[in-house]
Every structure is written in structure tokens, then in C-alpha cells.
Image 1 (tube, rainbow, N blue to C red):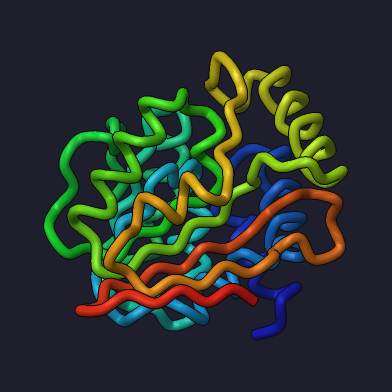
Image 2 (image 1 turned 120 degrees about the horizontal axis):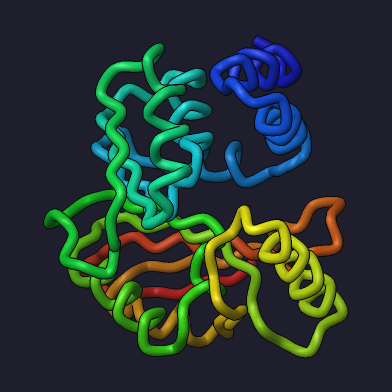
Length: 216
């Protein structure tokens, strides 16, 4: 199935026209879904900050069959995701706070959520994930001195202004804060901005008996 066909199929899951347009654009231009798919072990997955469920549905369309649980504190988006999920088996969506203890040994994905948490909440969430997970993939805009970071702040501020994103303030983490939470994991950090102006990176962590860190 071509990318355009996948985008059209996923867009058809949603009732609202603006969501269908958003999904078609995301699938067509956002590299994160393919990047996560390429890294995931074939084991149950927890998608923290799942929003309207696009990542779980994308994974199902590309042959990922392990159970998926999506968690998001925005009940509006969870309701949208639940309605869209009728086509898929073993996909569950929960409205809740992922800073609470996760199931032991999950695979975890977090896409673009840390900037909506204050320092303490970021540390709490990262610590909970590191304590319980064997595999973690995080796509995150990071705070640094680059022009890409400034563009990322502007774009997220606009999203907050539309009220689609529920957040009081923006608080982008540094690269060091994310990596530092995963002592004891093998790690890899790669740029994931593609043709966009945004300061996005993909962090991949795998628990190992001895840790190593590589950066591409």
C-alpha cells in the first residue's frame, strides 16, 4: 500500500473534516511514524500522549500486531481515538496521567509531549518510563541555541493558541535531560526534522546489562 493510500485510509477513520486533513498531512510529511515502526520490537506497546490514536493505527496498517495501549490526559482526544479504533483489534485508549506507575517491562513511545510538562513532571514521567520499560522511543523537540529551536517554539505556541493542545506553558527539555534519565540503557539519538524547520530528534533506548551511547 502506498503512503498516499495509507494516508487516505487513516483519514477515513475520523468524522471531522479538519481531522481528516490533518491526518493526511501528518502521514504524508511526518517521518516519525516510519522511524518508530523501524525500531519497535514485536511486543506490547504503550503510546504515552497518544492523542487521536494516529500512531497505533499507522502501526496496525503496517503489520504491527502486538497489543497497543494509548494513554492521554485529554479526554476529548481519547474519545476521538476510541471512535476511530473500531477497525482494529487489541488497541485500547485510556484517559489518564502516564506519570503514574506503568506496567512492568513495556515498550514505550512518546511523541512530542515533554514540552507541555514542567521540570518536575518531566522528570517524574521519564523516571517512571525508565524504571519500567525495556524499549523506549521518544520524538522530541529539544531546547538549545539553534534557529530550529526558535521555530519549534513558535509552532507549538500557535498550536496552544488553537486550544487543540491542552498546556499552560511550553517547557522544552534539553537533550541531556532526556538521555540522563536512561542510565543503564543503550541509546541512540538522531535528527528527525527532515524538510521541516523544527528541532526534532528521535531518542531510542534499549535496556541492556551494560550501557553504551552512540549518536548519529
